[in-house]
Length: 85
Image (cartoon, rainbow, N blue to C red; front, side, top):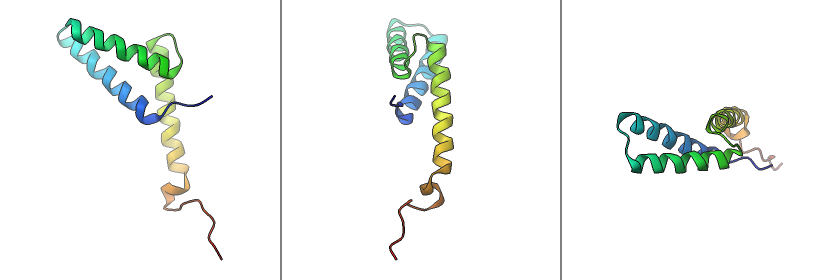
């Protein structure tokens, strides 16, 4: 199974959070529609039927991506390619 791009997931989570705040401050039909759209996209991207599961999976994905980045050779300044001798 292909994992979603962490950058895309991070953008969706950020947009979802911003829209939830906007909705709490002042409910408008436009914000409600956009929140519904972002919620649907986040669920589809994470392969879930509900937003709570989508957020949990997205959080797990971002934690794993951060962990993998720290372990990668590029994080140590290496390319991972063997040196030609």
